[in-house]
Length: 219
Ligand SMILES: *[C@@H]1O[C@H](CO)[C@@H](O)[C@H](O)[C@H]1NC(C)=O
Image (cartoon, rainbow, N blue to C red; front, side):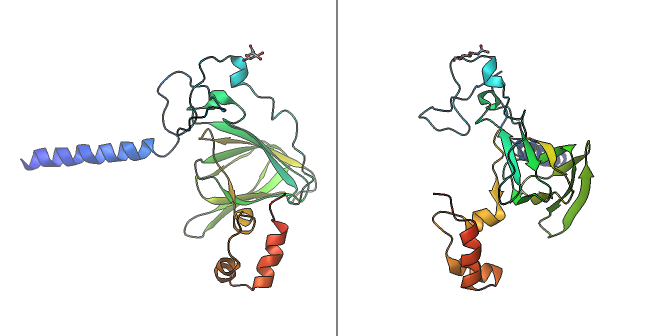
């Protein structure tokens, strides 16, 4: 009897572990392909499948050219996710390129649905992520090198080099999602109340307003 209960407990434990493992990334596919119908009126978790598709649905030239980095952060993320490549629907992967001007930064942000792995195409970057125990894990990486940002953790890439830099970033999600910390808190619409931010950051209303003015949503 005790042995049987032990076996059952072991089986249940394995079930829980395997369910947890399945839930650790995009859900698995149930057919060969499910090319996203991006314009479908019906909303599901992901996108409904188009009835017909061809090679164009599995192709993108979005990453051929460097993105324009003449913005306040000096960087640009060019995504090739399910919104650009409908064939990625249900496949659990996507890719992007990130370009950085000299001195540019991809500011601290998180991807709620994906781990990210970057490959440096050009230049040098100081990169890092911060664990939930507030430990900074950081390193300088250069052309040809690879670095990993675990799912959900706040991370950044900073170009302290003298020239431009670029990476290819891969994600284990068809749509990794991005929350950029400063933009999320100071550029939300409708705005996050000032007194939430004064208390959270232990600063005054004037300072909050000043930061908000830099992240005001573009009209
Ligand atoms: C795929 O189909 C679309 C129309 O739905 C067409 O415009 C496009 O040229 C086709 N591409 C290929 C590679 O066949």
